[in-house]
Amino acid sequence: MVPVNYYIILSAILFTIGALGVLVRRNPLIMFMSIELMLNSANLAMVAFSSAIKSLSGQIFVFFVIAVAAAEVAVGLALIVQIFKSRHTINVDEMNSLKG
Amino acid sequence: MPQPTDFQTILPLTILIVWACALLLVDLLIPKERKWITAFLAAAGLAVTLSFTIAQLGRSSTGFSGMVVQDGFSTFLNALQLVCGLFSIAIAYGYVKRMGLERGEYYTLLLFSVTGMMLMAQAADLIVVFLALELLSIPLYVLAAFNRMQSASDEAGLKYFLLGAFSTGFVVYGIALVFGATGTTNLASILASTPTSSVLLTIGAALILVGFAFKVAAVPFHMWTPDVYQGAPTSVTGFMAAGAKIAGFSALLRVFSTAFPALAVDMTDILWGLSALTMIGGNLLAISQSDIKRMLAYSSIAHAGYILMAFVPYGNADVAPVAIASGLFYLVAYAVSNFGAWGIVIALEKSEGKGLAISDYAGLGRKYPVLAAAMTVFMLSLIGFPPTLGLVGKFYLFRSVMAGGFLWLAIIGVVTSLISAYYYLRVVVTMYMHEGEPSVTSEFWLDFTWGLSALATVVLSFMPQALFVMASSALLK
Image 1 (spheres, rainbow over the protein chains, first blue to last red):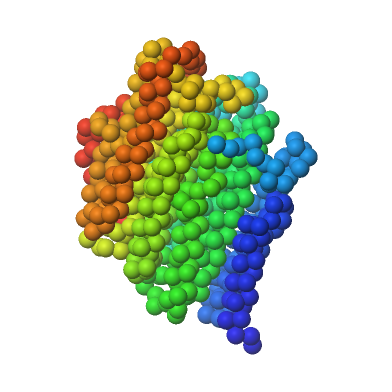
Image 2: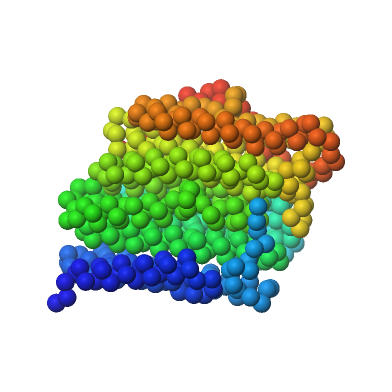
C-alpha cells in the first residue's frame, strides 16, 4: 500500500503545475486545461484522504467537483468559441480592449 | 431519507429554483417583443421568495444531515440578496431593451445566480459552500458576456470566467486539505474535531481564504475586477458588485467563524494585511480613473477592504459579534448606495459604450437637479460623509475594530476614506461646476430604483439603530 503522503505530495505538485499554467500560458484553452488540472489535483487529494481515514464523504465531494467542472466547461468553451468567431484569435494578450 | 423539515429549511431556495426552471420554459411561449413579461415574472418570483424568507424570521433549523442551516444570519442575508435581485431587475428592465439585449435568459440566469447566493448564506458544509459558489458564479460568467455583439463584453466574460474558475481551484484544494486534516467537511464538526495536522488545516483555510478573496475582489486578488466591471453590461455589473460581494462575505463569515475560530491567531494577521492592502490599493488606483465604471469598480474593491475589517477580530469572542454585525450593516449600506450609483450610470449610458466618462456628467446639476442630487448622495455615502448610511456603516466598523484593539487598521480606514473623497467629489464637482449638455434616459423602474436608494441612504442614516439591531440579531450562534 502506498502511503497517503505520496498522494498528497503528487497532488500538491499537480496543483502547482496547474496554478503556474494559468499564470504563465496565454492561450485560454491551455489555461482552462490548467484549471482542470488544479481541480483534479484536489480530487486526487480528496480520494487519498478519504481512503486513508475511511470516510466516504470525500469521495462524494469528488463527484460534485467532477459534475460542476463539466458545467463550467460548457460555459467556458462557449465563451471561447464566441470570442474566436468574432476575433479569429483567442490569445489573451490580444484581448486588450478594456483598459484604464 | 430527507424529512419534510429538511425542505422547510430550504423552502425559499426551493421556491426560487423551481420558479427559475419554470420561467425558462414559460419564456419560450412569450413572444420576442413582450419579454417584459419575463422580467415581471422573475421579479414576482423574487418577491414571493422574499415573503417566504421573511416568514422564516426568528426560526432556525438544520436540514439534510447538517448540510444546510437556516438561522437569523441566513435569513438576513437571503432577504438582502433577494432585494438586490429585485433592484437588479429594476435597473436592467429598460437598459436591456435599450441595448438590444432583451432576451428571456437574462432574467432566468439572474434568478439562478440569486439562488446560489442564498444557498451560500445557508451552507453549513464545505461541499455546499462549493456548490453554492459555482451556482452563483456560472450564471454570472454568462451574464457578463451577455452583450455578444460587443467585444468588450465577451472579453469581460472570458476574463471573469478564467479568474473565477482559477479561484474555484483554490477553494476546492483548500477544502480537500481541510478534509484531510479533520476528516470531515461539516463546519460544526471541523470545529469539534482535533486536526491530525494543524499545518494542513492552516494551509487549507488559507487557500479557501484566497479563493474567496478573488470573489470579493480583495487586493492583491483584484486584477480582474476593473476589466470585468467595465466590459460587462452595466446592469450586470451593478448586480455583481452587490450580490456576488455579499455572497462572498457571507461564506467567509460563516466558514471562518463557525469552523476556524481556532486558527484566529494565524488568520488575524493575514486578514489585517488583506484588509489594509485592499483599502489602500482600491482607493489609490481609483484616483486616476476617467471612466465612471472603472472608478466604481475600484471603489467596490476599496469597499471590500472596509468590509474585511469586520473579519479581523473574528477570533476574539467579546468583539466578534459586534464586528460581524457592523460588517452586515455595512453590506446593507454598501448595497443600497451601490445600486443607486449604478442606476445613475445606466441612466447616462448611451449605446456603444458612450456616456461613461466622468466628463459626460458635466452640467448635470443644472439640467437634472434631482438626479444630480441623488448621485451626490451616493457619492457622499460611499465616502462616508453625513447624513448618509455610509457614514453610519463606517462608524460602526471603525468602532468595532478599535474595540478589538486594531487601532492602526481603523486609522488606515479613516485616512483612505479621506483619500477616496478626492475621486468621489470629483464626480460631484463635474456635475455642478462644469458646463455641459448631458442627456439622460428616464425610465420608470430605473428612476424608481435610484430614487428609492437615495431616499433609503438618507432616511436610514437617521435611524440606524433599528437596522443595527436587526443585523445583531442575525448573528451566528
